[in-house]
Image 1 (cartoon, rainbow, N blue to C red):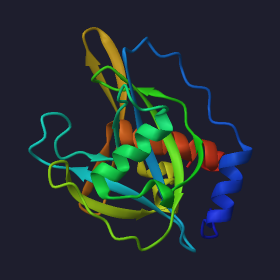
Image 2: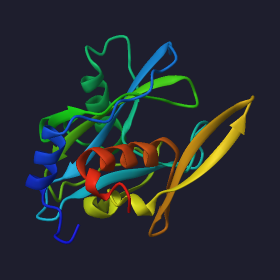
Image 3: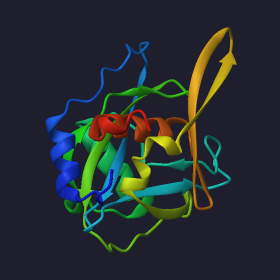
Image 4: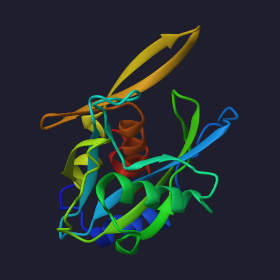
Amino acid sequence: MNHPLTLDTFLTRFQLQPPPLAPALSPARRQAAVLVPIVAREEPGLLLTRRAPWLRKHAGQVAFPGGMQDASDPSLQFTALREAQEEIGLQPRDVRIVGTLPAVSSSTGFRVTPIVGIIPPDLRWQPSVDEVDAIFEMPLQEALRLSRYASLDIHRNGLSHRVWLSWYQQYFVWGMTAGILRELSLQVMPELAGV
């Protein structure tokens, strides 16, 4: 893409092009949701977190705000917004939901639905000291550049599984987060699929 990616261009492409067909997921007992927060700047950003190093699961990994659906949550969208508020202090009223991406299966048995939302620039973050080690913004155009993702095939229990990997500054982006970003790129900028 020769021109900077604007928020309007992103929204038009996201809303007019259906997401790629997702493979059938094995039944998962637990549902989860993550918020994919797009920062509304002239050249939009993508907000990510790095999980605290002392967490029992996925310690130190770059992630979207999100987590498991509680029994009292009326929807997965509510789950994503509730978790974002708990993890980084993002108020639900500050998020304009624009759609979802196909659900993905996590290595821990969750069916995770990515919820895409637009957030205002320059909000003040309040990271949860229990869960979040860092909050950072990556240019959306950079996050959607397919050539930044390398694949690694992992063989476990007789099954092959492809994992996507990438670096941004000092942050190692991999696993489900990198996979979601790569799928979003394939949806929004399919002309760059061969890059």
